[in-house]
Image (cartoon, rainbow, N blue to C red):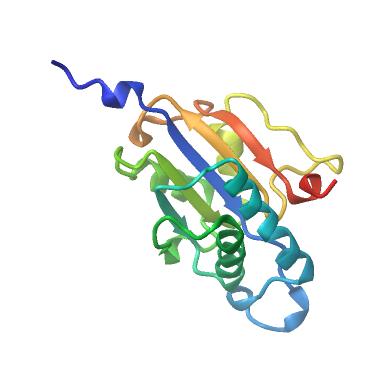
Length: 178
């Protein structure tokens, strides 16, 4: 009997932008912490993940302080990460092409992948992968701070290409508060 697991498996990619950071600290960019709004909004994403029982099989993240704090708040609210976070220096301010290579290099056994980092790279990756243009905010923005996008693919990571992902959800903390 032939193994058709890879052809029937759905792959899900979560793209999470760090929460709002504090520009007034005088710290280097890499060390900037979250501000009050960021600390309030990040747990809302964690609560959404818990309510929807969405847990990543692998988490790849930038090591910047604001990303670390975002994930800490998200996972505290969601009940904890299912696996340790893989902190990757190469994801700090990574561009779309690097992020795409990172996704494509993921083993097919991982069916739920979460990337956590920064714009503009994450937003450009989201636009590149979505089959349809994602909805903008009323102010004309796409992936603002603490936003989470979840896409699904019918092919393994190594085979994803432009506009091959279906956007399952685009979660914005401000909309969760309304």
